[in-house]
Length: 534
Image (cartoon, rainbow, N blue to C red; front, side):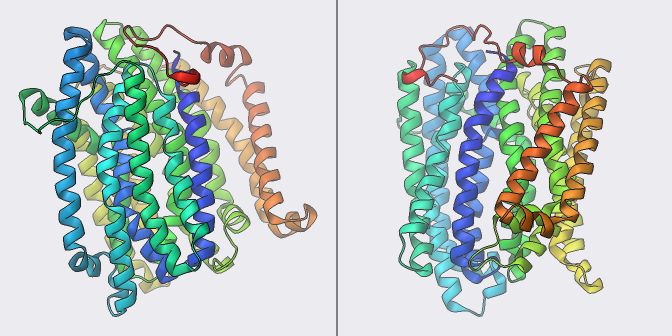
């Protein structure tokens, strides 16, 4: 299957999940308030599940696991590859399960550090602790889901692994809507997180069986094969998840400021949208393709795949980043403000989102520049670069978070600045290393396309800037603010597409060719029932 087609499948299903996730956040904000204690408790309870979901289920672990599994499958056959996957799964599940139980036991003592702003409110501490304890088993479920997703992706099956996250959003929406009051909703939504994790892992296990993968859970053993896999995959997960770790650092810092964690959570959900839709999708589709090219010594094809990946990802990411940068209040106030979430909450969230916006292209590019390392089973250097960016983010973020309030600026804005800066630092380290080694350097053709896409984005940016300046007028003219934001988003998208086609940044022929199915990897197995084979 072509890179663009795999990306389209992954992104389309992820879009469905993210739309449902946005609906869940609308319900949660209306139920708990934009900066209330229950919303802070909700964001805290989802902190670790979201980290594991993004690190493991959304590609970082899978990107590192796929080349190892694919090579074993090519060299020693499917049975040997499935045996290694089963041994790894059994060992990882034990480790994560022990961690989850230990965290649940220790949570009453950890919560005052995680949510220090409410340390003098025993009721908030109690419910936040209980909510977090109830969501912790989700981590073990994501361990199973991530490894099985890698098995499916190696076989060229992207749809199921991209589609199952919708279960998390469906379950949590149900928990929020069916609860009789806010207190009950806090507990019900936490239980729903773990229920969704069990359903996700079970469905992926079923899907792996349908394509012929023979996975088994046995007594955990630290075999040489498991040691090799962990040696590559764990650093790979850290490398691929640098931005997610930076987000966790920022969330820890906000624990001392009432309402700050909820503000960060809401802005995080928006700027993560292009990352989940485009960055993860391109990265997951790119790794198997690069692994095949490198194994066959096809340098020119690998170069072309990288150029395509950068072009596709930036064509879809930069317009979103520009919208977040120019009209963040328009977007948030029109879509989120309702119930207990006020326009003041929207204004604070918008200013934070604006600082994340200029880092969005970097967050996505990092997902494109790490696969060339992973495809050659080099996870050590990307991990070093990632940890460097985490260290810089921690120092800069902590400094700005505590310094900015002294000059009357919201400290949470500083966390956005630090995260975006560290994201671009990570991209610089990755891309410069690839260029210096001669592994990959952006071609002149790709630079030309990026320049033309930039002009198209500039044209779109002028349009959304004018619309943002007349937000109140457009809301009255188009009946409701919700209609206004949808109309502006659609018009901006159409304008961008027309500009991109007119400037020859992309052509209809290229789009049709990119989405045309290519031959899948050998030994891919049968498709999933109902045509769910990515």
